[in-house]
Image 1 (cartoon, rainbow, N blue to C red):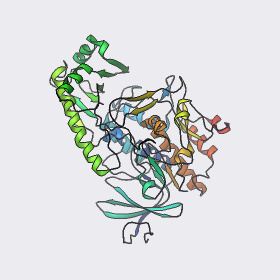
Image 2 (cartoon, one colour):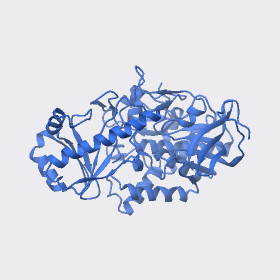
Image 3 (tube, rainbow, N blue to C red):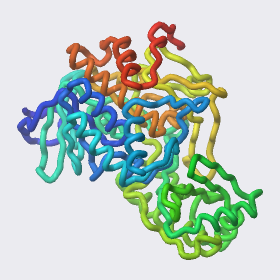
Image 4 (tube, one colour):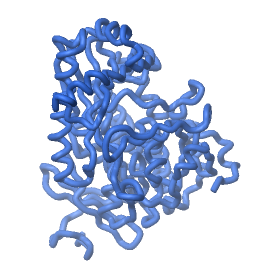
Length: 456
């Protein structure tokens, strides 16, 4: 196949393979999208740039899962819940705890993809896109086998950064409206050889200075503000944060630290990402020094692992047929084309420094994510899922959590399968069939939404 005029290389590549569905990105959204497409019988390829599935959960150590329930009833089940149940069976989590063991999760994800007959390519990067008008025809990828051209009937962009949409010339926005800045990035890291009993006793004896959150066997602790202030005054705490936050894991002597913060850097800039990795690792070691030097129970502790890449909360967001808004989230709006639901707060980590926003939605309520927010305006055979959905900066900050991303993925993977069966545009599928299929397969989309009048 000869590349079109918008292709950035003067070359001709043979078609390596053809699929009914190609999924770009193997995070939660990509895994569930690929599995759902495979479940519908579509020949599916999942392309992942790293060495494992799971995205931020496994590569950036982002855990535990943020809350995704209302009145203790989960809003997300389906393939996501199947995977969680398997992790529990293998002692990678306990009961309904939102924590998980990264290494066990990796293996379960691999086996789940295999179960649904999805072909998988690791260490493979999307280089470019071939399109004709509103139809994406193929993707140029690169791995140790060299440049390859893969074609497909339908494509799903779960890259997190809307890479496919970007390379295909589709519309997107970056960051908040006033200045284009995106949420702060965080390098997660684990500390081992911790005496949690002593740490908890120390914090409880100064309980007025700490926030405790318990979830089954997990304990979250936020505080240490006096220590942070002291070390900042000495020039030994180079973080735009005024506290330290960590959570226990399913290992008795281990905690996961969510404290580093890199601001004024873009997750879609090669130089910025490099600078962010360097800065965040320096920050991690600064946090470790404070805890080791000052907190009983941490004297013999050490950093056992850091995320293989920094955790990125926000980059590109596509312009879809509908843009989910802040009011949609906060006022718990429902839509006729709902494909999943969310209840997580507006959670914005200040793009410029410390602090941010944490605003709850209506109590005991949830909002819908409409199918249209996963359909790019520019294409007829492309869907997206995950944190590159069509949403405002504020709405995105709620919808970006892992469970919701997984639910979006299952929905668009199913939609691609239906489109393939019906030989139609992703816009022209039977939405009733999509919603009923998701409901029948354990995905929480209630059938009565089919009859609802859309909220605008």
